Length: 346
Image 1 (cartoon, helix red, strand yellow):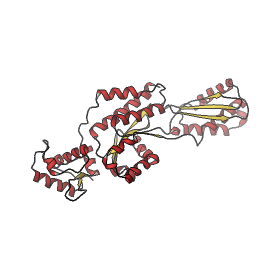
Image 2 (cartoon, rainbow, N blue to C red; image 1 turned 90 degrees about the vertical axis):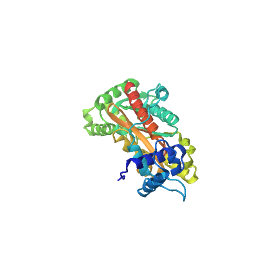
Image 3 (cartoon, helix red, strand yellow; image 1 turned 120 degrees about the vertical axis):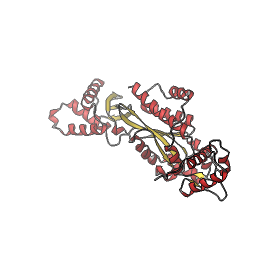
Image 4 (tube, rainbow, N blue to C red; image 1 turned 180 degrees about the horizontal axis):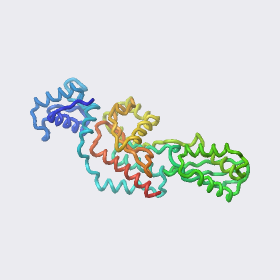
C-alpha cells in the first residue's frame, strides 16, 4: 500500500522526480530549493526528503549524495497525474501519415506502428499481434500451384493471414478448389479458429456416405491448414538501441539482461497479454512487470481492437525516469490510430 503524504511532501517529491527525469542523477535538497514551485526553506526540504526516504519514496544511492525516487514514488507520481501533455499536431500528423501501409494487412500496420512509435517516443516500442487461434474465421482460399501442390490462404477477421502449401494425393482442378472454398467459407463463418478446428473434425467423423468425394477433400485440405501448428502470437520490437542512450543502462551486465529479454519474448508477451485483458492504458513501473531483467524499466502500453475484439497491445519500454505526461498520450494515440485503421480497412 502506498503511503499518504501531505501537500508539502508531495511538492518536494514531485520536484525530485521532475529533476531526476530530466537529468538522471541523484537530486539534492539544494537543487530542490532553487525551484520556483517549491516555496520552503532548504532545512525543511532536507527534513521532508529524509521523511520521504524513511517511508520508501526516496533512496540514497551513495553516502552524502542526493536522493533518487523509488518504484513506489514513480507509481504515486503517475497515479497523481491530473493532466498529461498535449500530443503535438506535428507528431499526430507524422504518426497518421506513416502508420498507414498501402496493404492494410494487420502485420504491416503493426510493423509500421512499432517503428514510428519508437522514433517519436525515443524509446523501445513493443507491439503484439493477436493470437491467431483466438481470432474469428473470415475465409479460406485454395490456389492450384501444380498438379498436386495447393496453396491454402487462411484469413482471420482481424486481418491475420496464414499461408500453407498442401500436398494433395491427386490433382484437383481450380474450379473444384473454388467450390471447396465456398463450401468451407459458408459452414465456418463467424467461428473462432479454435471452433473451426473442432467443427472440421466433427464433420470428418460423420458417416462418410453422407458426403460426396469433393466435400471430403475440402474437409481434408482444411484440416491440413487449420491445425495445432498454426502460427500464434508474435511481438514486434523496434528501437532497441534507444535504451542505450540512457546512462542508467551503460552497465554491461544490465544491458545484456535487457537485450536477453528482448530476444526471449515470452515474458514480454505475457505482460502485453495482461494489458490486452485490461481497460485502457497500463503502466508497469520497475518490479511491477514481474520480469527481473527489466526491473529498472517502465512499460507503458494500451490495447488495440477490431470489431469490439481486443487483438493485442501497443507500448513502449524505457527507463523509469521517462516523461510520463508525454509518453502516455503518445501510446494511447497510437493504439487508437491502429484501431481506426483496422476498422476503416475492413
